[in-house]
Length: 170
Image (cartoon, rainbow, N blue to C red; front, side, top):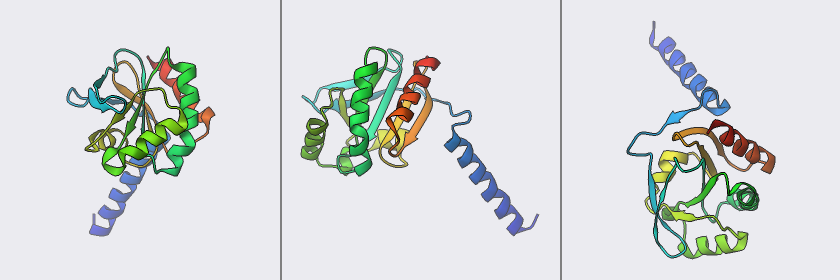
């Protein structure tokens, strides 16, 4: 195989893999022991919070206060949190190394966010769970598997469909 053919084949394989992931086909990642726990400071009071995926299915809403799409989706997440809070844990994860703490506090107050907002000060959680854009919604079942993933703003119905899919997988 000549060099051009190898390059073309490699490019096609990468694009096909990206399409498979984008479409959500067999999109199930088992978290390894090192990354299966998240422990971050909570915005309100600064207490260390450990996310326990085994407790309940969990939605991680990764955001920044300056992101227009995050601001667009915040009311949707607040409504879905209210509807599903007895069945699903929801955590806001602010990428604090790309934000201002005072702006994060204003964002939480403006949108009436009641679920815990954790501060990802180094951006490690963002890199692991959502490093492709904002907002990033990561749906993790009680077995620690990511069963759905949304990047960018979508309708509340689409987000709710992922909440329901999460409940069906746990």
